[in-house]
Length: 414
Image (cartoon, rainbow, N blue to C red; front, side, top):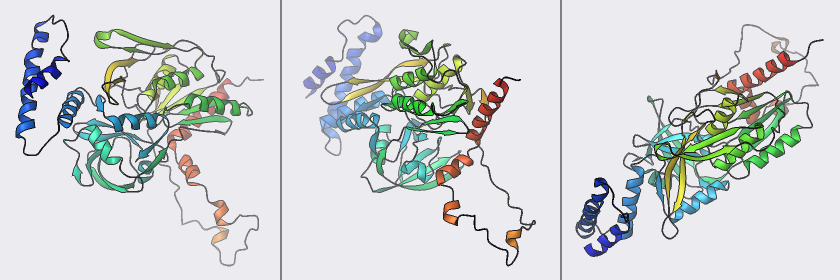
C-alpha cells in the first residue's frame, strides 16, 4: 500500500526541481503517503481510498480561496446544467466566509427569493446541522436535495438577527432577462449571465425600437454573475469601442483582454446601471466597463467584490478542478477583487409606504354615498405583486427619475 501511495504522489512531482522548496516536495509527499496509510488502516470506521484522496484534494483547494473547489462527477454535471439556465435547488448563489455559507444573491422568482433570503445573509445551520466545518460543496449538496422536499435554513442577518427560514426545493428555471418600456424608458433586468443572455437583450432592444425611447435602465441588482463571454457580449451591446475587461494571472502576468467589436445598439441614449451588494463577478465586469468609459451612470450601492477568474480544469475521468487562475481588471486597470464597484450615485434601497390619514373624511366615508359605476371591481383594481414591488422600489424609481431629468436637460430649446 505504501509503495502505491508513493507512486501516486510521484505523479504530482515536477520533472525538474529547481528550488529548495521544490526539493521539499518529496518530503511532504512522503508525509502525505504515511498519513494516508495510517488513516486507511487505523481509522475507527472503514474509509475508501477514493474518499480519502478526494477529501485531500478538496481540502487543498478550499484552503486557497472560497471559489476554488473539487468537482466530482455529479457536481460537474450540475455545473453544466446550471450554465444552461435550468437546475434543481433553492435558487441562491453562495460563497464561503469565515466558515459559514454567505449568500451572494438570491435568484429572481426562485424559492429562496420568495422565502425572503437576502444578499449578505449568513447561513449557519442546514436542517439544524451546523455549517461550520463543512466545505462549500458539502453545504451546496445538502441544499440541493430532492425537488419538492423542504429544508430549514438558520440565517444570521446583519450580525444581530437570527431567522429560521423554511424553503421548498424546486426546479430552478432561470428567466435571465426581463424587459419592458415604462415612461419611454427601456427597462432591462438581468438576473444572471447564463447562456444566450446577450441575444435576449438584443431581441428586447429591437422590440423597443417601436417606441420613442429617451434612455435605458440596466438592472444588475442581486445578479451573482455567470459566464465571462456573456458579460463581455452584454457590455458590447452598450459600448461602441474600447476595452471591456482584462485578466491577469500570477505575479500580474498579462492574461486575456476583451474589447468591444460591435456598435452601440442603443445609439448612445442615456444609460443608468443599477447595482447593489448582490451584484457580483460578471455584473461587476459590465458595470465597471460602462463606468470607466463614462457610457453609463452607475447607481445603487457598492457591489459584492468578486473579481477573480475560475477555470474548470478536467482532471481524471469525469471530474474536474475549479481553480482561481486570474483576477479581473476594468478598462482603467482597477481590480474588482474585494473592493467591488462604487456607484457614481449612492442610493440606498428604501421602502416607500403610503401614510393613511384617518383624520380626514371623504365622500366615500359617508353613509349612503352613491357608487361610481365607472370604478372596476376590487379584483381589477388590484395591482400584480410584481407591479406593486416595482412601485415600492426606491432605487428603480430614482433611476427612472434620472433618465427623465437627463432628457429634459438635453431637449433643445426653441
